Image (cartoon, rainbow, N blue to C red):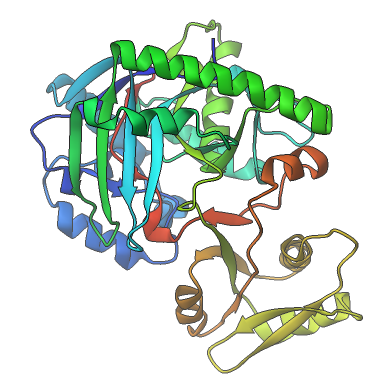
Length: 407
């Protein structure tokens, strides 16, 4: 079987998709007003908002809130809210605010072929360092959940466009499942069903791709790889940890939690833009800047910073091939290990500058990375620092639409 496969996909029926679909829970973590606006938009309508926990509230969540989410999942299932599309894929076209269309296909990945730990040799690789401390609170949400809703975006290195190219070729033959405007300036999205013969032909395209990409990187790096995680590294790591826990309790390889739902995108697509994720700290900014200057006495690489009162640059001292972000993150981690402070990860230059104007905050504007050699870089140099890049702006992230039973 392929690493990426078709799934039994659930879609809600007789609902407003405009109110059902909400953005990934790990977005707008420093902007609770965003989530308040989403809540006001949804009101009492059925919505994926009631099935996820926005991470803006993660640090202040009790078990009662998690129980409410799980109860709502069971309620939606018992009320027959969903229609199940058995052994299917969904071809997605997301029209971004730029006018570009980001293509993807929704299916499941085999967690037996994924390992998020450093020095992994699995066929699915994490692209960024996984913070172990971030997994347990997410495990609490997933361990009793009846459903999973994906915001994970996987990447294939498919210059021949075998997978999404097939979906686009047969696009007009596929039944339309949804077509609507996403709330909160998210653009527009359509979803089309691949079942039966179309799903079988996509299976074949996926199998051919996976064989070819493994051979490619065996020759280049003496290692095999088929997919990288684009967005949702910690969500996929949580799914893996949950599955491993179930195995320890006696579950076998047929358990539905062996798989995690994700959308697969193509690294080469022009619509796929790697955006930097900036750093925002609540701390003594003057002391932090002095600390950074002390740790980088011969620094030459400039990283802009902003506070409520002024702005400037910090100069980093980089070793050969060292990523500027890796150096900055190491320095910030060292500071936070010794001093009081909190760090957040911000999408968008304008948002960073706005948040950095708040009293007691300092923001660092980090540079982007190139996507062209992502697979090879991961194989040769290991995972990138956490929150290195984002695939697009915050409002271009995946919205929760499809779901799947995991019990």
